[in-house]
Length: 158
Image (cartoon, rainbow, N blue to C red; front, side):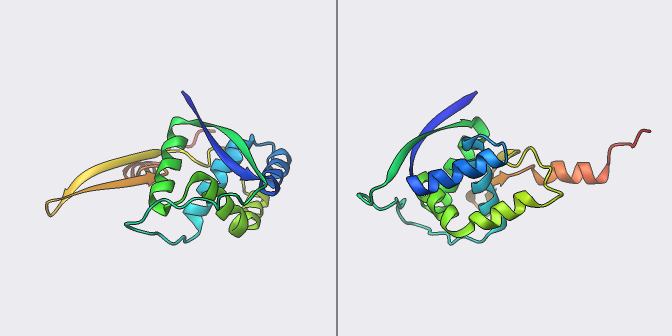
């Protein structure tokens, strides 16, 4: 099932996203999700605990409303990123473009870049640790699944 959300992106940033999405033949929504996923899995971002969500500056002008179609796991991923990094989706997108666009484009340009499923494997688990309820998010395949795959690789057939 697809979910739709709306955000605002500066005209300048939206034009960059559209140019690169077209160049790499990726839908705009997917480009945005892949880009955010790249940043949170490859770069260190400051985490702000016990604070409100921060938003892009109001009345800064030059913003375009954009509708983004997300798969269920992508929507959950975006909600987690908002909660962990305390930024609205609009601010997350602006932050990623302002700081990491060319790192992401360089990653897309690598010859071994054949990953068609850049944002897959969303799971979470709840557990108690010394009487404290904890929640752990996995923005990729669960470690137990990866252990099983590496311990029992698929047989090679010729």
